[in-house]
Length: 471
Image 1 (cartoon, one colour):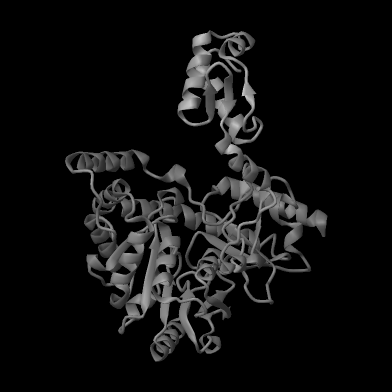
Image 2 (tube, helix red, strand yellow):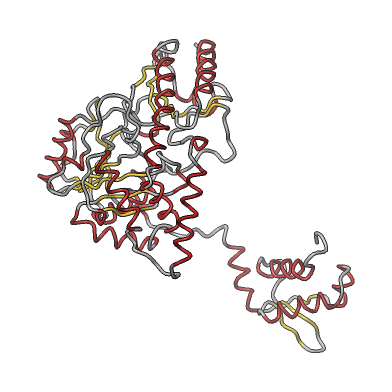
């Protein structure tokens, strides 16, 4: 035993574990409470209390004048415990087709200069303002009853999102059309649940976003990888029987180019001819650095085929776990039902705080500030990749987003660069895992959302030095 606090609790837990794990077998006699107290150096009252509790819970049985024994009924539990390592529980076959796409970076693995994608700079977030929004949300909750809320989300937040999309993305919707989700990932899952049956064909950009691919595969969909070019997904190569098409038109993931207007119109025409649903994942389109914003697919949709998915993971931070979907009207009710079945509704406290943050203008102010920082980081990365590192990299310069991709040149291989292989201080990440087809290209994804300017400069110097040594 460790320490003298809660002695009865410690003895109880150890004896109980011994019975459940089979170390104390059914029918085995235990020492008397007096003997056990002497061995452990505790009072007899302590051991008496423990035995009484274990007997009351059915772990022990007492025979007057004979002693205390391990109860017989737990023998079956112990036998099953021993067999657990040999018995394999059968799962649905579809899970064998789901790639290991959602695994996070190795726990505890950190790099001095980390270019991981999807990371935001929390040091620039106005937490004092956010604290006021949280306090406002707490005051609202104090006034209400403890009850379940609308599965589609809080009205104020849905209204704020609707206004934001109308002004910034030309997505015209009523607040009732917005469904709040636990990040973009849940939004993808809910839309797919509404329209995809096992065996249905789902078309994915290639390369594309692995968690989306995993989500559709988990529903039993037949995934078809469709190549992209400098204008986006190649519509002419879409499978004719596709029930759902997933695209990232504002900032193709992971390559970074936007889908051309011509290609957007062609995709909408293709979907209309086949009654297919399009998921438009606008995961980081808020940060645009060149030219005017491209028209969203949703803004061009006149017949109700596009489900527009957005998230606050890239504009605020991933831990917030707030996203949304503006679905075709014909799918709205089904998606609401799917959301209610999944988790009833998202956190109302977070929703109320975020609504206040947006409606008071603080979200827009935060975006302007982040845009300035991300634009400078992007420019510095591009300058190095097109300058002193140009012999090894062919950057695809993005017009938006918080990452860029650089294809490898002169025989460089991802495996020689990623995961600290080139230098233990450099957190570099490859793009080949994003391909679903056989023609994976070699390259690196440089996320600049969570790394500061001076760190980028030092990292690029180290990268150049190590590459010159390597080649």
